[in-house]
Each structure stands twice: as structure tokens, then as C-alpha cells.
Image (cartoon, rainbow, N blue to C red; front, top):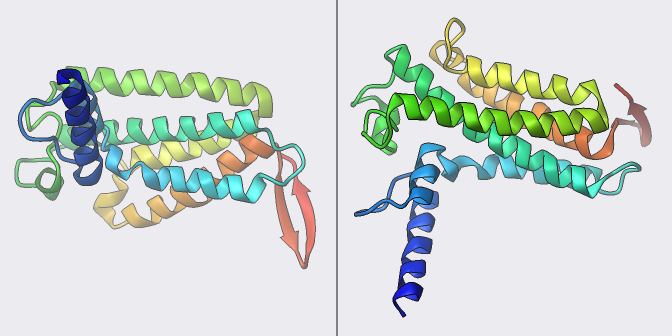
Length: 210
């Protein structure tokens, strides 16, 4: 009975974090802590991009289910890594402070004391390494265009907060999000699953093989 209650409590904690981006009251279990650190509550936008790519490509010649399953894992990890890196970059340049809006809607990993800067850096590196491993598999299967999509997304996502560009500081945050979660993520997952990008003009489909 105690184990059932504990399991129910953990599930309730995870649901709370995913709904609010904030840690539950009281003891914070490791999974809840990780969900807060990676801001997992916003990951559904990335999953949505992957599902759109799947809907567009599922009936196309060359579609491979296992690659379609792998690519979304890759972009979810990339999004999580990006969230971790954004918190690091904003902390280093002095953007994130105790009264900055980022720290008001959800706790900043370091400023709130949830984790040290060193551990946050290690977490970001770990997630990026895992993501790189997936990219290598996709590259072997689909070639260099997958790398181009990945590097484009990584560059814009990092430049969102990292100097010298710091896109969001110059009013370019929303356009960069549109580019990444639009053509780059949808196109990247689609290409990973199908192997080509088909462009339709007046009802005729033409394959763009990159």
C-alpha cells in the first residue's frame, strides 16, 4: 500500500512539474528535478513539430518508421539541451537575476539553488553528447542534410541567448523560434524519416534530393 501511495505521489509530482514548470512542494525527487531543469513543460512544442513532420511524410516513398521514431528523440534532447544552455548563457552574461522574468515564472536552476553551475554545465554536455550520438546514426542513414538541419537549429538556438548575437536581446527571439520550430525541426524530422524533401507545385510533386 505504501509503495502504491509513493508511486501515486511521484506521478502527481511529475504532472505538476509538466503543467507548471515549477517543482512540487516538499521533497523534490530526481525526475521532478530533471523535468524542472530542462523545462520539460515546453517540450510538447517540439513533439508537435515532429508529429507534423510524420503526418507529412508517412505516406511518402522511403519513409522509415525507426528513423521517424529516432529523430523526435533527437530534437527533444536538443530542446532540453538548449534550455539548459540558455540558463547558463543568461547567467554568465548577467541577464538572469533573482527578479528577472525568467526567475519569476519558474525557478532558475542555479539562482534557486536547485543545482550548481558546474552540474548544470555537466548536464548540458551530457544531453548534447547523447544528441550527437543520435545525429551520427541519422547521418549514416540519410547523409549530410541531416547535419545541416541539426547545425542550423543548434546555431540559432544557442545564439538566442549566447554572445555575441544574443538574438532575444535584439528583438529577434520570436523570429528565431519560428525558424527553428518551423522549417528546421519539421524539415529535419521529415528528411530523416523520408530521405528526401518533396515540394509540390500545381499538384505535381518534385523530390529535392540533397
